[in-house]
Image (cartoon, rainbow, N blue to C red; front, side):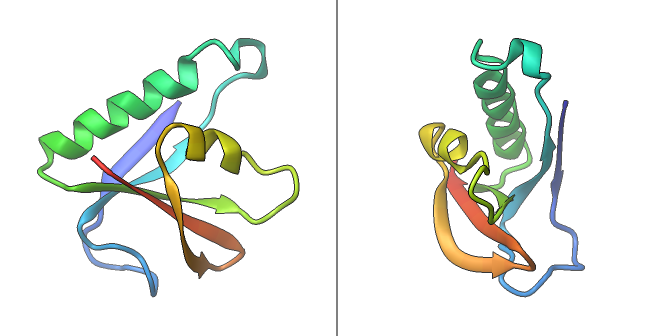
Length: 93
């Protein structure tokens, strides 16, 4: 399950107004490491492009066991901005 939306106001300090925002990406444990997450990200990229937005943004909980490695492998980079207890990530689409 992936939920993505364009920003329409109500931005938190540091959020990119020109990015589609990936709010949730959930992949069942029994199908992880089979390309499902990578496919979902590619669909999110396609949607961001359709909306005419140049970037895809999200955030990852700042924890030792986070899924940051996955997001970096699919093309996101950390911006250095913290949004609450989460690290902002961004990719050009």
